[in-house]
Length: 309
Image (cartoon, rainbow, N blue to C red; front, side):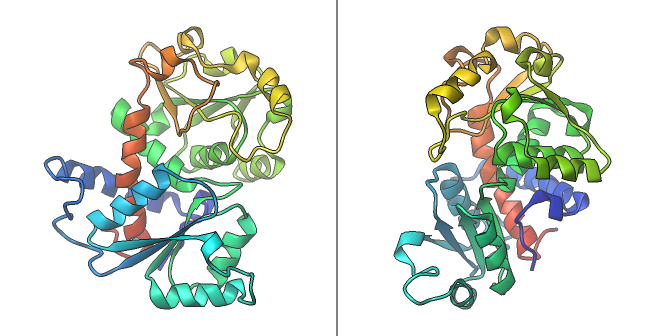
């Protein structure tokens, strides 16, 4: 049994094994229908419990299909429907119940502390489907997508992020260390990566390049990533934040600074941070990126269940 909470806690060799397994499984499903079960049926009889404290579309659907295609089943719970530390039941007791009924637990949470606390009491693997400081399943899937599109290891590519410093960027920064790729981050001065993230980078004796100029960050990029600048639960002065990011919009002019075959990726949902011309254009591979989450999450599940080949 292995948890999947943060990329920094997982060996690089294991992360690579997950991606390679996902590549093989995707190829083998070319002629399969959506709900067809993989021939090896590796998670037959297993139940994945999913719980969402925040809204979800891609994570919810992709994990549902991932466990189904592996031969298992899933049930989705709403935090509001559980006691979950309220009504006299402790989080520890909830964890014990989940461990009794299910074989794995996927949590999308509004609290990093909560996912860590769950991991102490669960006797089944827990997967971080998104927390305030990390989005590991998204970023591992993004690496899969980059290598699929570029047909080469990500370590040989220049990766660029234009936008806010959020949980997705945090995981992308960690991934840049784990997979040894060059990462340029373009963001306004007051929106740079958090100290705890940069401290970890420094401890790893590596570096990332931070620019307060989107053009400098995008120059010579193989892939340009972004995310919604104003997220659903963003507790900030939204008008001010939009103004602060006015020079960081991803448009055709910015994309032209990358390599000739530069690719645009976005974890979705999108906002005003990218023009329709780019988002809906030939350089954009956002739909392929979203679909690939199923394949990578299947291999993440196998890793957690000790079934990864």
